[in-house]
Structures are given as structure tokens and as C-alpha cells.
Length: 87
Image (cartoon, rainbow, N blue to C red; front, side, top):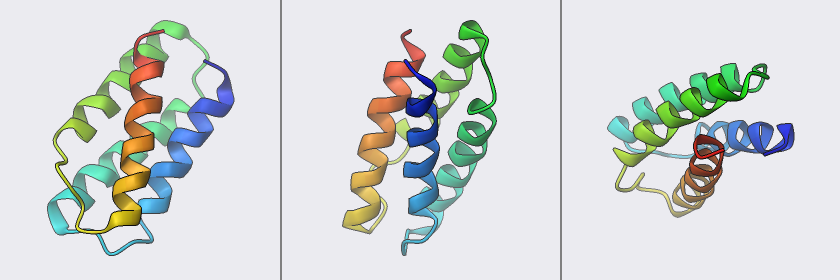
């Protein structure tokens, strides 16, 4: 997957920081955003797969954020992270 997918993953997660998200999902989203930020600078495919897997794991713990717009960003982030994790 091209570098723009890594950038889009980060942007989706960053967008949730500006939304009124419940406390527990907010913490998980913050962790996922930090990993996605790190991921943007990684070129090694094995490391990209591993770090994207961490994002997938963190996002899998979120059932909902309490905000429909944030939920849409999380759904897109999940798609991107899963695609990056399976490359």
C-alpha cells in the first residue's frame, strides 16, 4: 500500500481528536494515533505490517466513540490499518 495510505490512516485518527469522544475510546485512539504517526516514517514492509497490526488491535477494542463522525473516521482507519497489516 502506498505511503498515502499511511498518511490517511494518521489523518483519520487525528480527526477523532477534535471530536467529542468518550473517555476510553479517546485513550485508545490516542495510542493508535501515536503508532500511526510513527508508521508514517517507516519504509520497512515488515515493520509497517507489525505496527499496523498494533493499530488494528487498538481499534478492535473500540465498539463506539459516542460521536457519529468519529465513528466514521474509526471505521476508515480500521480499513486502512487492516490493509497495511496484511501487506
